[in-house]
Each structure stands twice: as structure tokens, then as C-alpha cells.
Image (tube, rainbow, N blue to C red; front, side, top):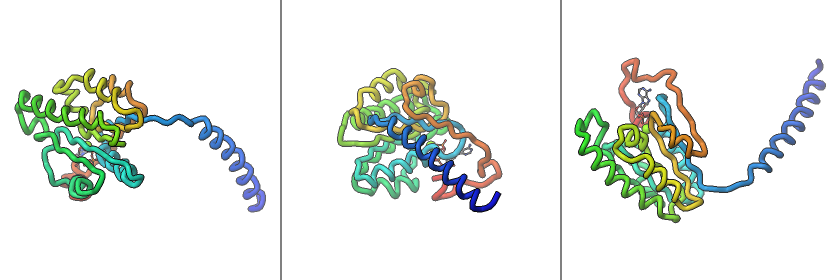
Length: 201
Ligand code: ATP
Ligand code: MG
């Protein structure tokens, strides 16, 4: 086939493709606040959430972040985002459960954290709420999944919510609009490389 024929075939294929895509775009015409879940064992859940945060801020939206479980206040994301206008940033955890080793304390911490999250979920001025590592509070039963889902469902209609963390419970997946499971294929940590600032924290 000559280059000219190849080009003509390509152009014809693209015309057909454009018609299909334009029709699909026309059909997807609803607007609503989304619930997104980023789960799985691979790296990239929280960093994806912070990528959406950058997008939302780019549109002038207000963004609220609640970091459950995590205790450190010197991550790169906090260093950058918490000082930006339009950002509310809360670090609500006291470390992973194998660090605190105190279930009662973990429950109290999670409950206090959820009270702050509830305030953001009631505030229509906040366009995006990120509940980072929330899944662990459900997995370990620190918070009541039914209550969490009820509070999320009752949020302002145009507010988006992103939940991150491994082992998302099925009820959360069922309630969500968009769910991505990030698969762990390889991680540098297993080759003995410690967490790298700017990449891992
Ligand atoms: P990130 O914040 O980098 O997007 P994540 O939110 O997907 O990661 P978490 O389970 O919250 O993953 O863990 C955060 C930290 O653990 C990061 O330093 C990350 O690089 C590391 N990590 C994530 N997945 C793995 C893995 N499969 N093996 C080892 N370390 C991991
Ligand atoms: Mg994470």
C-alpha cells in the first residue's frame, strides 16, 4: 500500500472514530459530585489524589484534605499544598496501627478525625474533599463504615470526594462512582531502597 493510500485509510478511520467519540461525549452529559476510590497494593493512591487536588485548585476550587493514620507533618504534599490558598489541611492520624500499638487510642484518634471530615462534608464551599488512608479506619473497625457512607452520601451535591487506602471495603466500592485498583508490580523498597523524598513522601 502506498503512503497516500495509508494516509487516506487513516483519515477515514479517524472520521469514523470521531463520530463514535463525539456521540459518547454527547451522551455523558450529567454533572454531579463524584465519589472516587483509589485502592490496591501498588504505589500511587495518595499521589493520584494530590494530582486531582492540583487540578481542582487550578479551577479555583477549595480543597479539604484529611490524612487519617499518617502522623508525620513533613511530607512533600503537606509542605506544598497546606500553604496554598483555598486549602484546608488536617493530619489526623498518629501513625500506623503497628506503630501506635494501642487500639483504644487509634479509635479515639479516628473518631476525632471523622468529626473534622464531617465538617468538610457539610461545607458546600469545599469542592473536593480528600480522605487519605481512610480505608484503614474501616478495615480495622475504628470507624463505622455505615456512618461514613451516610455522611459521604449526605454531602453537598456538587462536592467531590476521594478516598484512598488499601483494602477498600466492598460497601465503599459499591457507593463509589469511580474506583481504581492500583496493582503492585514492582516497588523499589523491596530492592532495599528507602523512601525517597519527592517520590514516596
Ligand atoms: P503514594 O503516596 O506514593 O501515592 P500510596 O498512597 O499508593 O503511595 P500507601 O500505602 O499510602 O501508598 O503508602 C505510602 C508509602 O508507602 C509511600 O512511601 C509509597 O512509596 C510506599 N508504598 C506504596 N506501595 C508500596 C508497596 N507495594 N511496597 C512498598 N512500599 C509501598
Ligand atoms: Mg497513601
